[in-house]
Image 1 (spheres, one colour):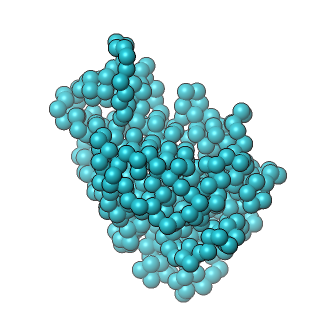
Image 2 (cartoon, one colour):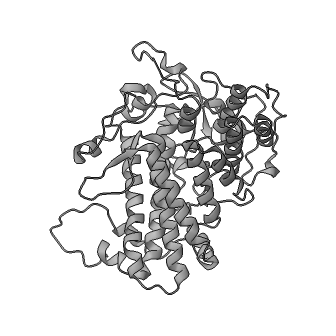
Image 3 (tube, rainbow, N blue to C red):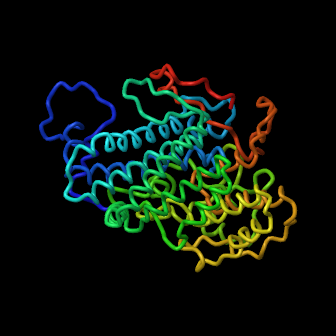
Amino acid sequence: MKKILILLILSISLFSCQKEFDDHNKVSEKDAYATPAAYKGIVLGMTREFATYSLYRIVHAPGFTAREFGNMSTYETESQLIDGGPELTGVNSSISSMWKNLLRNRGIAENILANIDDLEFSSDAEKVAYKSYSKLIQAITTGYMAQYWEKVTTQNDLDGQATFVDRTEGLQFAVNKLDEALSLITSDSEAENFINSLISYEFSIVDVIKAFKARYLIELGNYQDAYDTADSVDLNKRSVWSYDGGSIVNPIYQYTIKPGASLRLRPLDSLGLFVGNFGLESNDQRIPFYLTDTSNVDTSCGFPVDDPNGFWNYDAAPIPVYLPDEMRLIKAEAKARLNELDEAVTLIDEVRTQTPADDVFGVAAELTPWAGDASNQEEVLNEIYKNYAAELFLQGQRFPIHRRFFPHYLDNIDWNNVQRCSLERLNNFYPYPDQERANNPNCPPDPAY
């Protein structure tokens, strides 16, 4: 992401504290949002915070919950995630940090939208660009929350009185905000070009909006709409969160294999798909794309682990905002759930038989067409799930996708006796952070697990 001399957002906080002195060099939150020239820094700062702090947590906790990461430490944070079930509590720093960071990102977007209409910018396109992008951030922060928690808030409340709604309402809120963002940005091509070039060296806001909308529509069970939306995404365009390798570092690399990083977590060998009912073919080229073979094992279950490759192997490695094959698999899932199985299998084969030249990020299985029973809906759906799990490795999506495909997976589990290392998914939803519960009387009861 592009750097400017001062990222004003680093001086803006959603939380206030009383100081004993006046800092005359620091721009106040109120003044920043009242200053049109500050908005470039605010938007870049919001993006930086999401692409580092929030994105790391989106990968970290769900990566343990859905068997993408192995635990290499005795720290309570990772140990709780690996134990899962009722052992995972709201004190866990990973899920509480994800909640806090997503609220912070959404709060900045809300502040932009609350103030921007009262300001005059050098061009209408600049204002449209900031508004559309802020609605996108509103949508995806709420959407990520709705993928991991049973109930969510859709608007921040600085008085700690935010109301909670069912996660499906949160997903619908995200869809609505994405529609608003798309309507705004497609009304002004100059605005579209402005925000694309500001956010990253490769970014297509129109396709990002459509991709996240397709993700939320399939989660809501709106299958035809999900298919149509995914089908409208240009799969030849890349959108990435970018890092300069200096002050802004790829967060997965930074906290896993960067020299000096603590050995707390590593990706599971074979993308973790040897746990439970699913396994990849040994010649699936997504394995060496995403992993560098090593000989370590985790400390909790004795699983073999590898070092990350792919999008997380150096300081400035860009991370995809979404992967094109997610759109193909959303289309395949929609067709399968509509019982249009031949079309679903055709889409599965598009994913399975890809070569690196066929994918803008080079993620390619390079396998033969699927040889399963194309007339069996359950088998077709299982193959779709397996490809989701492989294609979207460490994207924070395996956890909600597994729950969507296997909603009753954890029913009737005896947590006192179950062999937890055999489980493919360790929770249905996350407990609410203790800080949220302590400060917000509207916080719902925690789910059972």
